[in-house]
Amino acid sequence: MKTPWVLSILLFCYSINMISQKKSINSTQIIKSNDMSKKLPEEWKNTLNDEEYRILIEKGTEYPHTGKYNMHFENGVYNCNGCKIPIFNSDQKFKSDCGWPSFDECIEGAIKYVDCANCNGHLGHIFDDGPTETGKRYCVNSVSIDFKKKS
Ligand SMILES: [Zn+2]
Image (cartoon, rainbow, N blue to C red):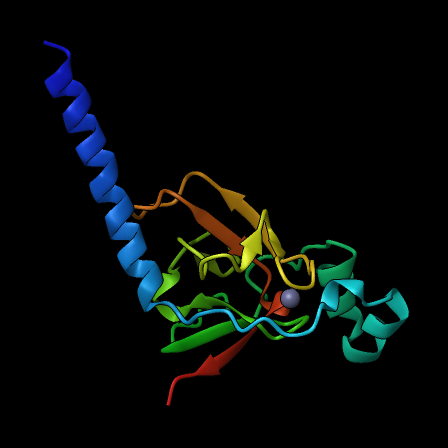
């Protein structure tokens, strides 16, 4: 009599997976640029300002409630501020009182841990206390991302 239970659990997991896959298909696909991860610190200093360098490369954190994207809710895409690949869609952002821009999902494959998968730029932290169905909360620095409005 255990089989129906196992089946229903499998079906449940499958449907959850389908919901998340459906969301991913709508996401902007990653356009892989050249391998930015091989950039030297001196090269990063030529393209990033001091605060961007401190956070993206030295894995720092901006002060809470100060980032320009903390309370930003326009329709568009957030790119990695290091290498400019798209990492979050605006529909993945939610209002959080934690003081940093928060997302419940990232564009598929765009982030490994809390760093940009393309250039290793530090984005922030991920927590399992998200309020939406994903249960995730990508808590990132505004300095680490660059928003592009959808036309
Ligand atoms: Zn990047």
